[in-house]
Image 1 (spheres, rainbow, N blue to C red):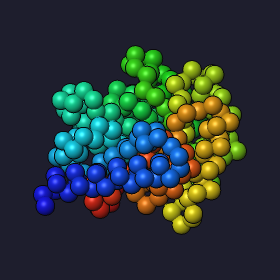
Image 2 (tube, protein in one colour):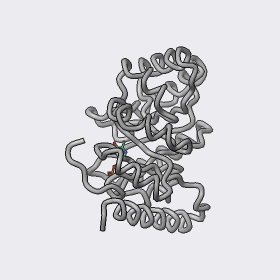
Image 3 (cartoon, rainbow, N blue to C red):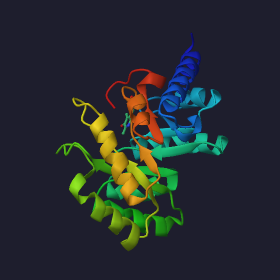
Image 4 (cartoon, rainbow, N blue to C red):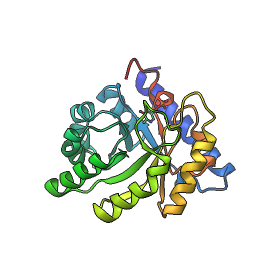
Length: 226
Ligand SMILES: *Cc1c(COP(=O)(O)O)cnc(C)c1O
């Protein structure tokens, strides 16, 4: 099979598994959006996924996305790009120009930088607040205990378009308690969007209420370092 056929086949399988997981949770299939994480894969991989009907993509680095996506965005008006990786404040403007949604709002300085960038660019991508549900020191994300205050500041002080929450559970733990924590926090905060679940655990995330699952390797194959 060509790489293009492999990507189309993988996408079809993931879509089936999403529909089945949603059905098991008594949720409509359309309530879960598949975000195809194309980081480290070239524009031809994204083009293959587009040809197979995939419209929503995730990238974790602004520089890489800036090199890959503008031409694809121009050619495919339905394409939606979500930035899912740690974002430096000096990349905030470029992120605001490129992205439809930024999923990694994780600290007060970035909230300020994004508010300024949105004013300068006249563009308001949706935002998700990333929560460090595992309280891992090396991982980005706002700590659990600080999340409510941070959300209030983002929404009320900075007027940011916060749509929901995102998390990446610790690799060595059962993700379900992390997914449940995030879902409960979103419900308390009146936030509709829950980005959680990756190739290894997206079905568990759907059972816990994920509205967006971020799947990379199960669609595009294994990555090198990325
Ligand atoms: C790479 C990445 C993913 C996709 O991971 P896979 O295990 O390849 O599905 C999801 N979310 C984030 C934040 C990532 O960086």
